[in-house]
Length: 145
Image (cartoon, rainbow, N blue to C red; front, side, top):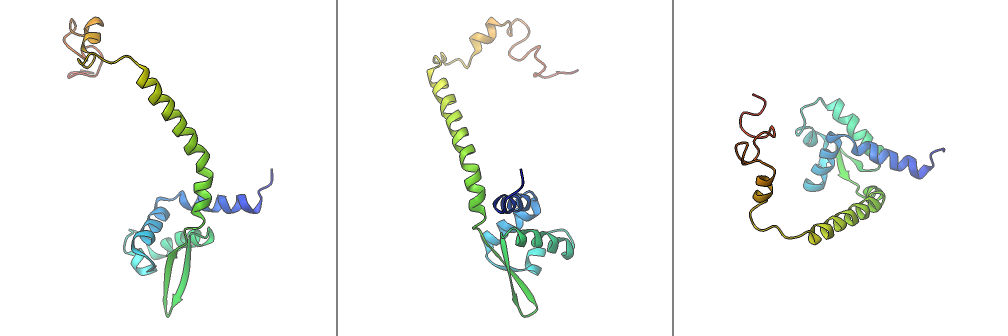
């Protein structure tokens, strides 16, 4: 199926967000406001041309804008394309909220423990006979020795 203009825009936004460096640039611009490229570069252990490539990807995705002020380039967060991400994630959020609600309901329907943290169950499994809880399961001290 050929990509439409909308899906190409979404792909650019998701592609831009795939890099931890670019996500950090967006966080810096969100938290600290518009900044010149020199100020942004001070936060990263990379050469300016590498950061410029990241800024170009963000600019092409519409996530940042660039304004020239004399010899400086000031970058500003443009959050509008992030609504596409939110809209795309919405059904998944609803899916997981429903699953978690089902899990909570299931857990609420389980019989209450008798307050011993499941120790009676461990004894029934023979944990006490083998040296206490966790013995013989590979989780206690000396496991793998």
